Length: 76
Image 1 (cartoon, rainbow, N blue to C red):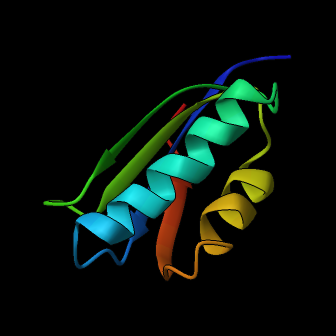
Image 2 (cartoon, helix red, strand yellow):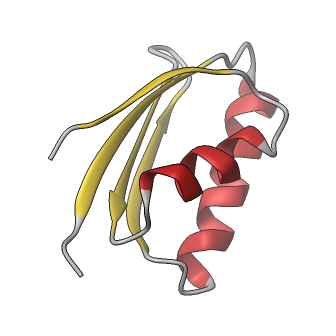
């Protein structure tokens, strides 16, 4: 499968918020769900995820934290 890069605008207001997103993405990475790398940036409220995982699955994983995913795009 081809690797893709996804960029999400996620409403995160504190370190706990970004920590929750980081934890679920780290779990997805370690569980073999197709996440090869990710970056969670509290200041810009951006989450960038690279991997073979489908867009909808990443969106679902982030949404399960209770954080609002305001938008998302496939970068490549």
